[in-house]
Amino acid sequence: MTEVRVGVSGLGSIGGQHLAALRAAGATTLYGFDAVPAMCEAAQAATPDLRLVDSYDALLGSGLDAVVIAVPDHAHLAQLEAAASAGIAVLVEKPLAPSAAETAAVIDRLGTAGDRCMVGYVLRHNAACLRVAGLLADKAIGESTSFQVMLGAYGTITVAANRFATPAYGRLYGDYSHEWDYLAWWFGPIASVLAVERTTAAVPHVETPNLVDALLETGGGMVGALHIDYVDQRGLRQVTVIGTEGSLTTDLGGGVTDVRRTGIDGVQRFSDLAPASAALTRQAAHLLAVARDEEQPRVRLTDGLAALRVADALRASAPTRTWAKVGA
Image (cartoon, rainbow, N blue to C red; front, side, top):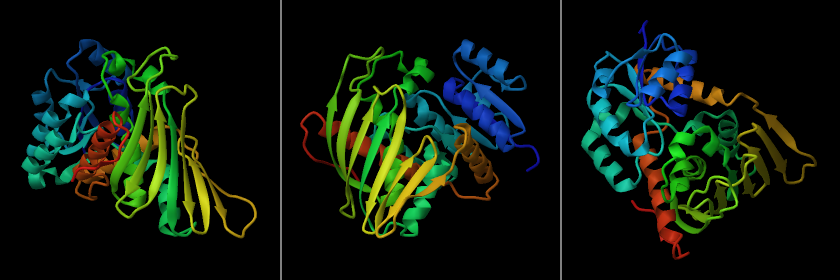
């Protein structure tokens, strides 16, 4: 495949980042569509050779090898189904949809047509996240027994202001379904959850809720704690894993992982420092490899559905503060 033709549907903040990543990954011809003229103009200014089209149908009719779907969540499934049914390799942004039920129906309808589709859980391509996956697989700290996740992400609201202009309950659960995805990758599927949510008005932009604390139990019986918020303006994404032979703590944003082993003094530090765009570029390169049938999707539609089911269970648990099972 000498010429690689990739389309991007949705040219807002994340769509623009995908365009840059695709170009860095080797896409030679880029097409774009957005229903908002101002978004098209901004994308054209940032990517002068971008070929704009006037409809999603026109985008799919451009002879694409792959398409990235970065439109608002409620429009993901319709665009996904159209692209996959046309035989185009697809990267669809997370979350797949506002809820799991409609997603499951689309996956069932697609059948094998969904085999070249992937979900944009970009942390699967984050160097520190990959480092932790390797350390855990190698039993660097023995058997994993519990985890703690701390995520503060108010900065997302500033970067993607258009997305947050319309009020919506529970956006935090879907926006940071990244966490449910990499935890399932590392430790196995999440089976049940217990959530407590709160909303504070002491920040410039208030999401409802903007603070969530939860316990997550995997199918294997491991229980971990999680805190996510749209309050901390510094930005924090830190995970600690306790094992039978030590512990590790990773800063997924900063790229530093510290391993402490039982009976060994000091800390073994791994530095996987990289610009934020590096993981997106690796994800884009993976999409191109899927389009060339050289690789299979690392994050399948079923993984996206599993993350949605965790988000749904958390939303169900929070009002009553009781355990909720993750749907099958």
